[in-house]
Image 1 (cartoon, rainbow, N blue to C red):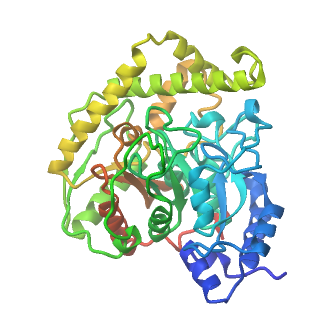
Image 2 (cartoon, rainbow, N blue to C red):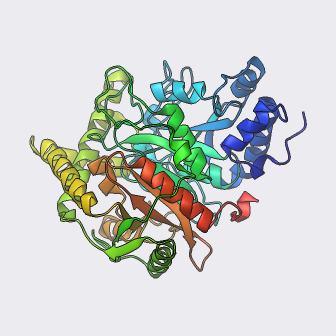
Length: 475
C-alpha cells in the first residue's frame, strides 16, 4: 500500500474530510502515521506501546462515522484504559497491567472515529513536568532532541510536533496538557473540571485536579475533539458546565474587545527567564494591536499555601494508587519497583496529618471562589505557560534534593492554579526563544469559559499563524 504523501499538510478535521470525500482511506492514513512513527520515533521515543496491527484490523473492519473518522490517534499511557491493551502508567509496578475495559473517554474517542494505534510516553504516575520514566526512557523534543518534551503528556506532545499525527490524547493534573504544548509548540487546552468524563474506574483524581483532553496543532481540532467527548456520564463526581451550541463554531467568531489581566512577574517561587519575558511582552503587544485592553493585575491568593496544597494532594493520591496496586499484586508498597521521585512523594504522604488532605482541598476550593471574583473584573488572564524554554534532558531527573526545588521553580509556571480552581486554560505557541525553542503563552478564563478561550485562540491563530512553523524532526 502506498503512503499518503500529503499526510502532514492536514489537521485532524482535514484528514477526516478527505476520508469523507473518498480521496484517501483510513488504512492509507494509518500507514502514513506508522511510516512517520518508524522514521522518527527512534529519535524522540514518543510511542512506547505499539498497537499497529490492531489498528490495521480496525481500519479494515470500518470505523464509526464521527467527526474524526479514520484519523490515526494515540492514547497517553496514563489515566485512561483501553480494553485488552497494556497501560503501564510509566511505572514498572504496572509493566504488565492490561485494561479490562475502555474508559468512558476512550469509548468516546472511538465513537468520534479515531483509530488508536499506540500509547505515548509519560513519567511514572504523571507526577513530574518532564517525561523521563525509568521503564520506557526519556522522550525527546523534536525541536532539539537534547531538550525535554515536558510532562506528563510529553510523549503525546512530541508525537504531534514531529508529525506522527495531528492530535493526540493528553491529561492534566498540574499542567500536563499545557506544559508539553508549550515545550513542543502546540495547542493545549485544559478543560473546565467535569467537562470530560473520568469514569468508570475513577470519580476524580488528585482531588478533582486531573482532567483529560488532547494536544493538537490547530485550535479547531482542539475544539472539535471536545465537542465529541464532553458531557456527563452516570455517576459523575463533578458537574461540568453546559455549552450552548458547538465549540468548533466558536473558533471563527470574534471574541470582542476583552479585558485581559497579565502577570509580568512570577507569582510562585522563582522568576521568568528572559526568553519568557520577551514572549510575554510580545504577546501583550499582539493583544493590544487586536484591540484588547491589557493591564497588570494579580488575584488575592497565597501561592505558598497553594503550592503546599498541591504537594499534599499529589503525595496522598500517589500513596493511595501505590497501596491499591500493591494489594492487587499481593505485595507491600515497599516491594513495588518504584522510582526515587515516587518514593519521596510516599514519604511526604506519611508526614501528612489526618486533616492535611481536606485542608488542601479546602485551599483549592477557596482559590476557585477568588478566581471567580477576579474574572468578574477580567475576561481573561494571560501568563507564560512555563518559566523557561524546555530544559535539557536530565535537568530535573538528575538533580539532587538541594537543587531540585530551585530547578523546578525555574522551569514551572503557574499551570497548577487552574487545576486547583477547576477553570479552563489554554497554552498557545506564540513565541520561540533565540535558541529556536517554543515558549507557550497561557490564557485562562472563568469556570466554563471554553467558548471565550476558543474564540480568542482562533483570533490569535489567524493573527500570528504557527501552522507552517515545524521543528527539524517535524519536516
